[in-house]
Image 1: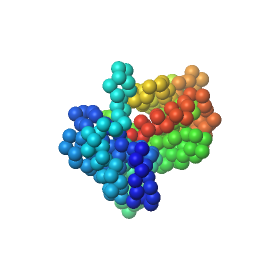
Image 2 (image 1 turned 180 degrees about the vertical axis):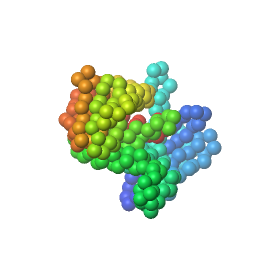
Image 3 (image 1 turned 60 degrees about the vertical axis):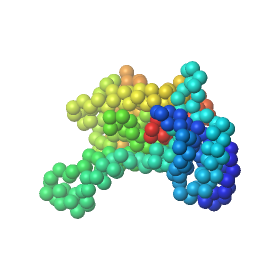
Image 4 (image 1 turned 90 degrees about the horizontal axis):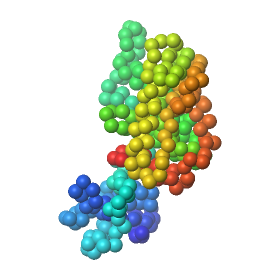
Length: 291
């Protein structure tokens, strides 16, 4: 660990790690929480500062290692057979822990650009309001996100709006002593919901594949996490319904947890699956958009 003065208000320890992947050979200067504030190209010696307030610290931390041909740098990856790969050092741009509930829906609505006046006019004329399903979804994710954030005091980590491949995102990811829970939020205000083994019916309507998709999402998340973790990472699918008047789950439906939004607190006391160290390892991987 290197100690240097910091523009953040006092001394800070910057840890320098080496990262070699995809043809790159870089040295990263990281804050104690793992956030990268700068990096250097080992081949060219060029230094890139990612946090302007840490410019002097980054240069002071990386320069000696470049002069010494990086001999004293802690390797970020290892070539040992069977070793797990490591994600690139975390940067502010890649940190998903800053995402608010419904972040992806917020972006879609911002791109849509439909203002409140246009919405009122459409409602008065009884025309479909563009993006209204996204707004309902956002309201639901905000409510569930608020409930999940309360579990932090019980040792849980929470992430919101985690992007996967193919323009799919996980509404919420809960990581803690009881394992990892991949949470899918559905907002059906004033509706009655029936949940079966593979489908869901809202007010006795057409079956929707919510349960099947939730299982598939959880499996995708588990594959990513276990790719970087050297221990099993059980990921359970969860469906959370917001604003419903009635929620019925068939007795044979056991592999997807189903709750109303105020019932997710039932996850808080679960334990015995991940240690504190494993929780932090999974969280570091899950919060990295490039993982």
